[in-house]
Image (cartoon, rainbow, N blue to C red; front, side, top):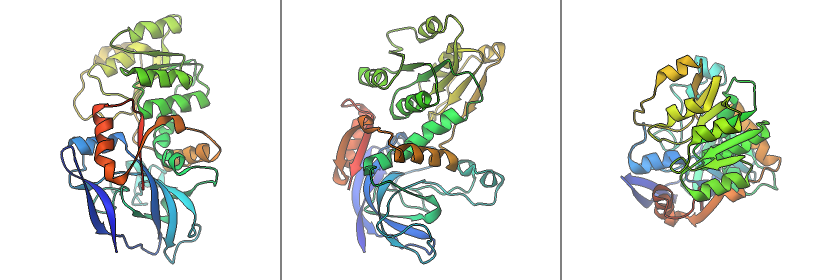
Length: 341
């Protein structure tokens, strides 16, 4: 049987095509897709800058939908369940899989590759172990938001610094704003957000940022120093890709503070390492999420966390090109673009 799929076929070119509906294995379920989210990594594919995904490739990895078929080995998911999917699974045998760090498995399988189709399709197959049930009170849109929320959970959970007086979030797109939400839940007292778009700054203030700064108009480091009586922030998260972003993060952070890099910056970024050495700062990367982070994000949404404000555009599968153009070119005020099937 055939189904519709949205593929990136060339740089900034999306095509809606008919492909074969996937056949499920014994340990898999078949999901009738209801909503999918456009992610920053989809933009990398769209622009031809993704680290390993190249056209032609089916878009997407953020999904919610209904289970319409199950393999004979499936035990805990049934037909009719409303679900989302953790879009990764590992070999199960390497040192990272044994530690629960599927995100670091060298043989990890993700959607939109040869071994697993992307989610911008009418029907999507997924191993039962990657499938999470949604409460009846949770909309498909909010179920789809679990995946990007898990990225934010991972970014905060990776930090080792104990103090939670001040956090700086550099970049207030989808992931930056979700980091704001998670930081508030984790008890950070002062939260500084930056962005060059007024809409995103207003959204940050609405959702609890202490201050929101346009770095093209105001001195971010000076504002952070004033807010912290000259001490600096405990943690800075990099969720944008400006050329000076690491230096800016380091200058915002106190002695022995931390810098977390979440943004997929695929070009070389220079930075002044002496500042990090002089202040004994620690810098870490956060690669997507571990299963424990995804589980925590799912619990947050299932327990009523409302992120509807962040879904700023909704359109159908036939308008996927338009959705990516909006996000890529910032044609409109935008945080998260959602595709409904």
